[in-house]
Amino acid sequence: MPKIKLVIIILLVCSFLAILIATPSIAQGSDLRHGPGMRPWKGEGPCRRAFELNLSQEQRKGLDLIQQTYFQDAQLIRAQLFTKRLELRELLVNPAVKIDDIRTKYLEIIELQSKQEERNIEYLIKVRNLLTQEQLQRWCPEREYPLFRQMMRETGPKGPKRFKED
Image (tube, rainbow, N blue to C red; front, side, top):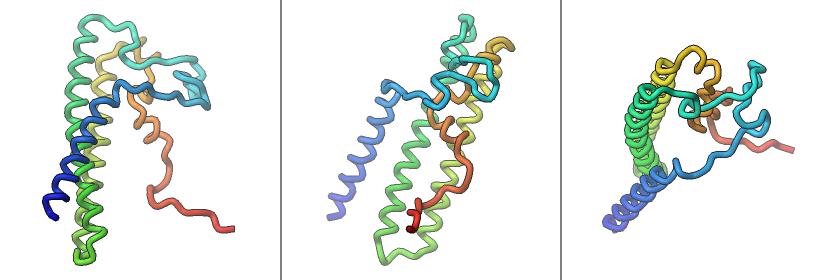
């Protein structure tokens, strides 16, 4: 029985990693409220992702290096998060596990999520430092990756969804 659980966990981790590798090739939807690439808070019209700006050869090389480093690091953190979430699930469904162990595992997940958000901001800062003043005016950091848009829109604590009582 333990071998089956190990095989299932390995298959889930491998599937997750395969999805991570394939994710960049999937088209991303736009924010339909304001149209793709619009800056509703500035009223300046369309804005671009860093690679869509008129970058010099040196800037392109710098951006490629920044992106490569970020995506390698981000993949590792996402895989660690995935594993920790699987471990948390196992703890939650096991009646013999102590509540403190569940809380400790959850704190590990929160720590990894915080690390992931730090990496996201560091990536954006590095890209920002690479761009000229004119490029910064046309750059939309929220378009660099979809999770940043979600992070910017979230206002309130995360938690279980509650249904409205009639």
